[in-house]
Image (cartoon, rainbow, N blue to C red; front, side):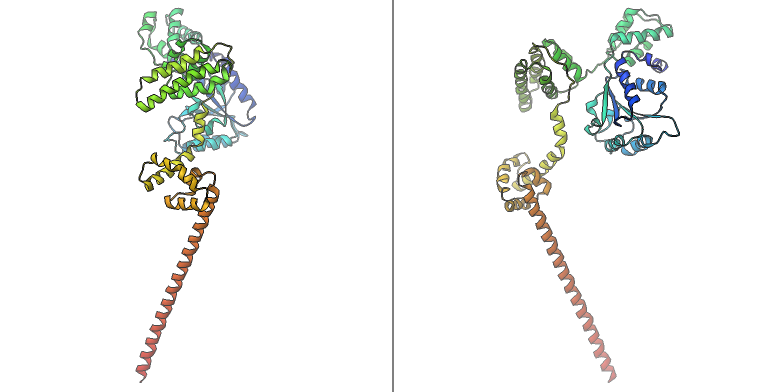
Length: 446
């Protein structure tokens, strides 16, 4: 396998990533610094993992690796990463911990892996590097604990140079134009280009490359945003054909980043197109007529792009704050959903229709006593009262707790009285039995 035989072993063999490679080396040289981990992200085949292996060799680190596509539960992460992170390098070589495919952490099969990893990142004696294709697939609790370095999509020239080195070493008969064609077809993926070269045999011509099966290339949302904000043509919408995001999410990304990049004089025009796109997205939701997606996409991408007339500033793209808000309010929305389900059961409606009673509930909650009665009637928990009646929730919850304590005291009192009655009955029974024995004894005496 060419990829294994010719994997980089020295810094100079890492092609097209000079700047991010220097940043990785600088980060290691200054570690522990603020004791944070490092996240290296970028498209597949850009050299992220290869760079870490080269750094490990050139800087004399012992590498401890975990691939989270195979194992991502808390026990495995603590066993492999936790022990290595907390071990001391006083009497042994320096350790470097690599967590590959870190964007697999999270989700239903996580089984505590996210929490375990976050705890390890907060308390480590050795540098930790995480690798991911898409940093926004990582849980927020991990992202805020790491520094980030991006490996960009490799240029065809960088891939061509590496292919030439391999072709010369293997004695493959191939001209520069064919290598250029092979590199361009790889879509920035060095690994894929090397695999293609190996599959074509000892003699490679342009026609051989054309016969290769076209590779599906998924563009990142960042490439799409760059096309929108840097061009002034509706043609940029073609870039989004390969972006694996629904139109609603694309609009959130454009809405979040456009005001930070565009000149203020261009912003009203851009928002005009965004708002019109939003109208069509709303019609898709209401009518389930998905052909409107095409109109919405043209407006939000092509429309925003042609509004770019004045000089645009450069800024780092940020994920939509809307998604961050959803993450922060997840627990609250869950409680609100449970509360409306309880209201719906009492009012014989769905939880969606039950929301029409919100105004009535809010009015009732202005008086803590009435609020407590509402909570009792609908069987609401204190957390549910806090999301339904946020303004007066504290007073209502206090009354609910007092009522609960009173019930407990009454229950204890009743239980104590019952126990006392039971004890009295037992005492009376014993006394009666004793009297019967005494009377029997006295009878036999005579």
